[in-house]
Image 1 (cartoon, rainbow, N blue to C red):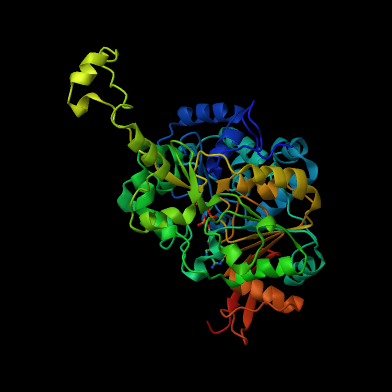
Image 2 (cartoon, rainbow, N blue to C red):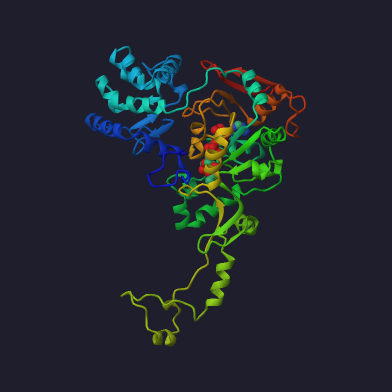
Length: 479
Ligand code: OAD
């Protein structure tokens, strides 16, 4: 079973880490893209509007998606209720019957239907005939149809609590949001996330700080910020404590974490219950000779913002000098003759070897995830999981973001985070600080989640989100 659609010939579980948008583009902009490009050029695409939620197109300019809460601002768009009904209908009857029932019978325009699937109507189509929206709609329908549909029987907090109580094999998928209460920034939160603070690096996209190609070109960029994400004290959040509690109750199948801070271990989550999908700082490897060291061997350098050098390379270079030095190629490409080498005292004539850089064993964009990720997920956990809980991640990075979609569709899925996501449909969304959400769930389940950051008399208010049967906001009362 493919973990994600991988280019032919590649091992599907060796999918390199990429942004979700890049995967979507490859998947969705196939045949329809050609048609859309034709439409765009016919109607003159000069839109540079880029405030959409997800910009999806070859260059991120033609197709933009909007969030559900933006629907109400678009004149003529579907209401949220209409949008949800169209999406459900599509999943119920399939693509062909859906198109027949809507476009062919002219019960709704293609333009309006695009909005049901979150397409932001492009300015270049203003005033165009309705058929001009067909290529966009085709993409939107395919995209929606490939999504796992929400299971209608799970909606309430009581449902969530019952699922927790009854599940025996829970997959917990975590991201940076579970560590922010410890003062560690996440990546994409506006104003507080790490990426919002990297303008000074002059990168075209702050994520390039974790791009393997950029690292190879200039590792100083990564090491200038690495100290900010280095694990420090042996602390853990109530959410880490919750994962440990699931382990203690024999309910934790696997915690797939994207976090590289290894804080789960501080909480007592056992190594065999964890997959560190994006690696960790626990070890580091020389990019030249593959010499491996414990991660803390380079922590001093990282804290000082220095690029750590490989000690094995340094040693072998020391033994090389001067006889082992290779002659530089002359401008004609020939090596200078031996005699000239011996006579010359000019160091510029020789290639001076440099030691390799020690790269922490965290997965950079463009690198493969550890083998264990795909192997365990596809060949073991997929069959066993009876509940999925996704906590504190924007699910913007593949292949981890694809995990909810590749699990059997009847396995219930709960999402816990400050911000909802619109590209994956969970059965129940529990919005708020994850520490507050999990502590309240435990309280209602009759479980004892002890942690010094959870006040003994904590009172949590839960309010439904208008328009959504299964979305609830958690807030500490009086906070
Ligand atoms: P993001 O920063 O993309 O997402 C964190 C999510 O957690 C956001 O939706 C926040 O709203 C939410 N959040 C923040 N604090 C929270 C809290 N206290 N309680 C609940 N939710 C909270 O981080 P990730 O999804 O983890 O790669 O990012 C995925 C990957 O992208 C990372 O592993 C990283 C990055 O590039 C590497 O480090 C290699």
